[in-house]
Structure formats: C-alpha cells, structure tokens
Length: 308
Image 1 (cartoon, rainbow, N blue to C red):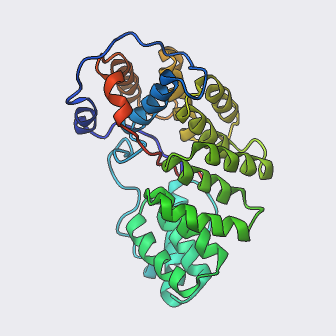
Image 2: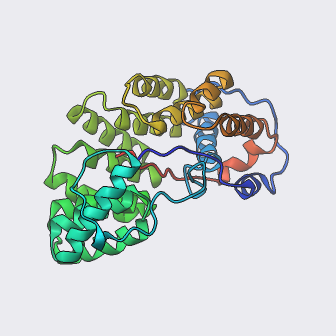
C-alpha cells in the first residue's frame, strides 16, 4: 500500500545524529563510479540513513499520526468484496474477508485474502497471526505462501521472507508481484544485485509497472547508482497511476544529488507543505553534517516498502 511519508517525531532525528564525531565536510552529491569506490559506499549508506530519516523504516507514519484501521468488527460486516487502493475500500475488504474467515477459519482463500487486507490497512500483527496459522494448515498453497511472504517482507523478517517468496515465485512464475516483493526482501538483507534481477523479472512480466520501477530505483540508489536511479524513478513517476512511494523515492534521490528544489516540489505532491519542507530541510542539513561521512560506514538501514 502506498503511504504518505512524514517524519514521525524528533526522536528519529536525534537517534540519527547523536554521537557523531568529526570528518571532512563538503562531500559532493554526484553519482560515484565503480563498485569498489568508497564514495559509492557512502552514497549507499546515505540512502539508508535517509530512509530512516524520512520514515521508510521504523519511523514511518501517516501525516495525522493515526492508524488507518481500528475497531471495525469483521463479524458484523456485510460488505461485498472490493478491489481498490482507496483506504475506505481496503477497510471494507478487510471487513468482508474477516467475516468469511470467521465463518470458515480453515479456508485457505479466506485466510490469504483476509491476511492481505489486514496487511494493507496496517494491522500487521493480526495479519501475521492469521497467515502463520494458514501456512501451518496449507503449507503448499501458493496464495497463502505469497501473502505470508509479503507480510514478512513488510515487517522486516527478510530472511524468512526470501525463503517463502522464493518458493511462491517458483510455484507461480508469472506473478510479477512475487518477484517485486522478493526484490524488496533481498534489498533488506543487502543482496541488491539479486534484488535487481528480481525487479527485472517483475518488469518482464509487467512492463513499466510503476510500483516495480519505484522499488528498482531505490535499489539502484542503495548500490550508489544515483543517476540511473533517477532515470528509473522518473519513468515510474511519469505513470499517472504512480503512487506516493515513487514520488517520494525520486524526491529522496534528487535530494541526495543536491536538487532540493525539485525534490521539495515532488514531496509536496503527497505531503502537507510544511511537512515536505521540513523533510527536505532535514535531509539538506543531514547531508552537510561534517561527522556523517565518517560514521555512516558503520550504519546500514533496511528498506521497508510495501509497493507490491
């Protein structure tokens, strides 16, 4: 599910910058060349740090700070199933499949679709409970494996996710979303080259898919290829159906290249102006911190992206 990203609170910033010691300032934002370049590694690490700063890991929240889903009784729902990315429709879908699951908790279909709906509205602990039980009951059901693997990816249980999604994608080799999710899981454990191969496979199955391009662009940034990442993300954003993640990922990459004006304009497409301005200002300040470049080699931040 695409989400509008905002800095959750000051503690995220404090955790990031506390304890840094001196190092040379004035690093260029440009794209480093050569896979063994120290500067290339620093750019990769700066992307990871920026992901923390912009809430793409544990500090992610919606601008109003409230969970999308809360308190609806699935047992009382009588909605027909829907297929939409609108939040209210996702809640309706969770309610519908929740009622189906309560009527037949042994159903693989109900468990898979209820687990997916719960993940999409942010009820991940409940989704985990539903899908973990379903996997025990239906260990070879591809729908169940697919949804469980995607959930594991979204909560950062990446090693498990890679195993489950590899099994699911082998059983369903024409499903682009499984290769995209597997790419995200591989990125989370630092296997970026393998991740890129999976994004390419997803794009073979679903050409020009903006969600896959968004994931691929961020993966390219994580290996330090900012110029290539920018091209990939611009292609993603050119799709009228592109979600907030694509625009915010491009905004991040542009910021790392020093193009703060365009980065802020993109950020404002999905965030309140004050939040967008604050995020870009914070990135700008972060990137000129004299101590950042010495300490960042010791840090490595995972991706937490659910655009699959």
